[in-house]
Image 1 (tube, helix red, strand yellow):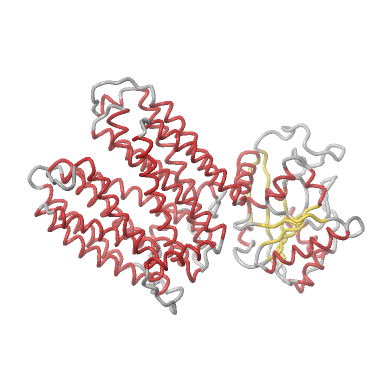
Image 2 (tube, helix red, strand yellow; image 1 turned 180 degrees about the vertical axis):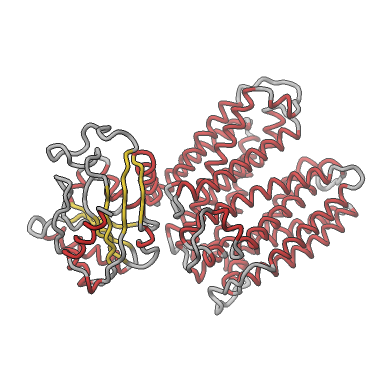
Amino acid sequence: MSHPDHPNQFALLGQRRFAPFFWTQFLGAGNDNLFKFAFTVMVTYQLQVSWLPPEQAGLVIGAVFILPFLLFSATSGQLTDKYDKTAVIRFVKNLEVGIMLLAALGFMTRNVPVLLACVFLMGLHSTLFGPVKFAYLPQHLNERELTGGNGMVEMGTFVAILLGNVAGGLLVALPGIGGNLVAIACVGAAVLGRLTAQYVPPTPATDPGLQINWNPVTETIRNLKLAHGNIVVFRSLLGISWMWFFGAVFLSSFPSFAKNVLHGDEQVASLLLVVFSIGIGVGSLLCEVLSKRHVEIGLVPAGAIGMSVFAIDLYFASRGLPSVPTQGLATFLAQGAHWRVMTDLALLSLFAGLYSVPMYALIQLRSAPSHRARIIAANNILNALFMIVSALAAGALLGAGFTIPEVFLFTAIANAVVAAYIFLLVPEYLLRFIAFITTRLVYRFRVRGDDNIPVEGAAILVANHVSFVDAIVLMAASPRPIRFIMDHRIFRVPVLGWLFRLAKAIPIASQKEDPKTYAAAFAAADQVLAEGDLLCIFPEGGITRDGSLQEFKGGIMKILERRPVPVVPVALQNLWGSYFSRIENGTAMIRPFRRGFWSPVGLVAGEAVPAAQVSPALLRTRVQALLTA
């Protein structure tokens, strides 16, 4: 799809393809939480219900709300793929208005069974909206906008959760009229959401011929198998579900943590929620800036590291606090030790935002459009299961006598172990993280012409070979994974060799030196292109020893004979003279800071050359021109 570029993600709020959808989902998330929190407070503080004790009210309401995600996510994914997503959105918002009218009656009559039924129905409403929420964006945003759009949605969701909880708590607490005001607010938010939904642009069905399977059990199994068909996507689903496991431990612990560990009142508990929500929102918005408006999954390991580091520090910051009488908000904020707790909480949630947004964008980008909504439905199923396991695990640890700070510590350690496992299973995350760190911290990296690197379909990149980190720099510039053909000797270099094996780089030797490796390299290259992926070669055949561009060899022609695909010339600028280039007597990687720190490095991609026009001389001329561009 083609849309005019915009200066940043906030500009999307001025465009019809995004703004009505954003406000529709914002109002829905806010209404969910306004309703649930007001109901929880009412049952906990204002009503005496024998079959719903106050200490179990939050748990029961949360369980009832999440149950539809397990039962109906698979069905909702099918509906979203089969029908126009805008039509589904409007149907869901009509349903929300009806549910909130019933809930209004429940609040005004203080009827707990009716309100509990509405909790289930609002869970159903959210289940139906979930696949639409993430399947809508790739149909209206391009690859460069997807991270920013997801960041805005993620930020909006957590701000809506925060505002909904605050509004619900304040309104229901007003003596005599609280229930009536909550009723009015819930219906008003639902009606306003339906009005904004009317302006959401048409979003055609991606699989209109789909036959709906109404059996939730068999369809849930089929959805999970469908998701498992793309292993990178499936493991990303597991990564997102783990984030919800991690977050649920903290969110569910805030009331007890505030009361029993921080010795604060209800306002302190609310402050923790505010800090957590703001952190998630800021982290989500930072993704577009840090990723330079691509889907940058290198942020995911950074997010995982930050989540563990600051969760561990939260344990140390909170375990030794003295036991004092319950403190109000002003007294709590007057103590320096509490600021360390809030800083840890803000930063761990900020890194959770950095962790989750690129994963959502990757799933949207890599899932087949025809069943993207069903993949998102599978994600919702896994999220619900992980959150249930999270509640059971945290409850078991607390029941065994562990303190809340110790539960946080166990969660932080588990997060480090799970993250390491995921990144070894899907090395693309780790490789992109290394590329991200190299090009943002080691070098000052500038990319031009990256829109010439295709976001889908097979293509070959040809680049000058200046240093031992050329492949890493290229990884950082591409929105997609790249498979590299590299001299077999580079695999003997410590650390770098391990990285290139992890990246599944293809070793090549000259036909005279090793005919078997030579033939295997071209067979592997053809397989990469047959699968519609990107292949990169360095036609000079080795790293330059004097900084000049060498003659291009004919291997590219052998590849194109078997698989004619577009060829994109790429120039790596200013890497000659860096630590990783062979500037001193043909030796690299001596005197690490000979060019200082954060030295400028560039990459320029030129227009693709059709396979029929390619020749080594032409490609060399194109790369030479780009070097001085």
